[in-house]
Amino acid sequence: CIRCGQGAAPRAIRPMARARQHVFAMCVATAVAVVQGQMGKSSCPCIDNVLTHVDMSMYLENNNLVYTPPGSSQTYTFQSTYGSGGCKTHDKSLAPYCSRDTPPSWCSIQWCYVDANACSGVAKIQTRYFAAVEDLYFSYGTC
Image (cartoon, rainbow, N blue to C red; front, side, top):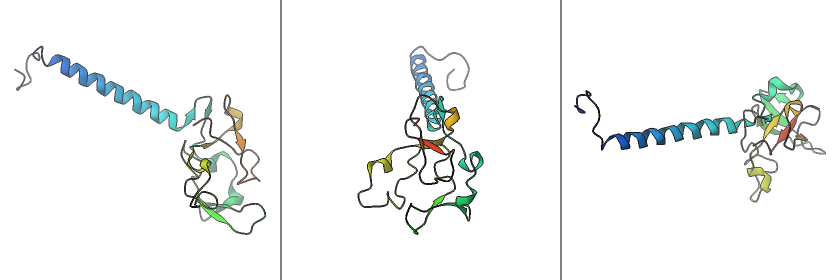
């Protein structure tokens, strides 16, 4: 009896149950792939927390990262998670470049900080925002 949970389901219901199982399995597989993709390619994973990876102390103020463009005295404050924790559009809507009415196209591209020594197969670029940190690289390609 289907209603009371005993016995086998009628043959007409079995294909529907199989179809639901298939859809569920596809959803789980897609979710796993998305989560893995958020941390970059396995050949060049994103840094989970840049503050524990390199010494950013000279740029930290009140638990935020402070950026001063070259040749400027104007400073900009970013969250301490800037560039960390996976592939994101970390620059989207941020001053000084991406808060403009027509920001550069790179403002809406996902990227993350990577360990240059553990990154192969994609381009990695040394950061210019925090130039005194010699071992800080980022990558669009891993995302």
